[in-house]
Length: 412
Image (cartoon, rainbow, N blue to C red; front, top):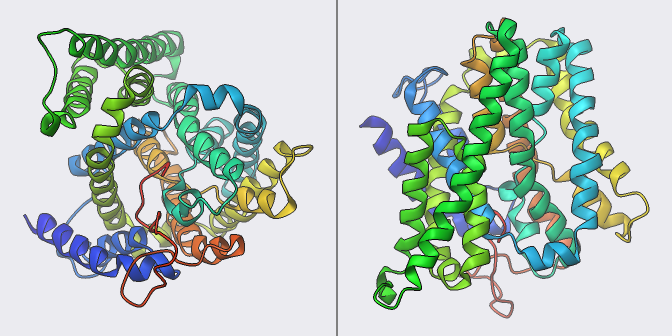
């Protein structure tokens, strides 16, 4: 119950400071991260959470499911068909380059074996624009730049997942049964994809029967019911819930734009709450001991991951495109590590890998540094695109309608 009180207080403070956060380097996401760290064993000792605590895996799991479900609902297949080249470059070239680059520096600077190093690279490959909402949520920012960041982050979670699971199987204590593990992983991914496509498709078809249909005030609950059923079904059958969530969101939007629009405000609010809860719990894991366990080489690897590996890989992937130099640099910088990396990092820790704890420490510190670096720079960089009024709060210029805050959901 103490954790619930702490979350409520953190949520209240975040709401009260959200207007200020939208106009400055302060970030509501950062507030939850710091809040979790302050009340943990490393500081005030109000809550006692360890990486193997059930609440850690549950909150991270729910947050990623909610984020991917709402991410999928922002996928527009017609727009993707028209403007697929730039995201395809980022995903097909930039992401593998970042994956390999991170694996190389992890192996040589941290001393992890090659399999675990590639596993760290795969875990840190996904990006999350929630920490760059002043960029992705503003119409003043060029549409092609916003689309690149949103589509890349929306899809790379799902692309990284099979690689993460396969490398865990290869590095784990059951690696001698790799063929069986790979078959199990493939089945879980296949079931997740099937459930994610079939369930929303069937529900939307049911709604179209003459005798069925939701009254207006209950329409937002239809996608919510799909999400709840899907989440429970995946866990009961061991289907992959993350691939199912993203697929379901995309199918729901493709089959019924009305359902998507009715659910959007509620869905994004629920996803935001889940993300804040996950950040608070993750922050509680960031104890002084965890930071002390990372070697000097590990810190060098973290800095290189943020300021070199991601920027260089994306810049290489965008060679020959029509992005301006400024747009390329902004896209290259905003590759923050988010909730997918948190969940995948926990999978690594709980897999029983011989170097799992060292890998998780590196992953956790990298995520923490990324949140601080990216969530504190999106507002200053947004101003390069003449984004001035970032929130409608007392004292702000109301001539420009607000469309983004630091706590805006992914894909706004």
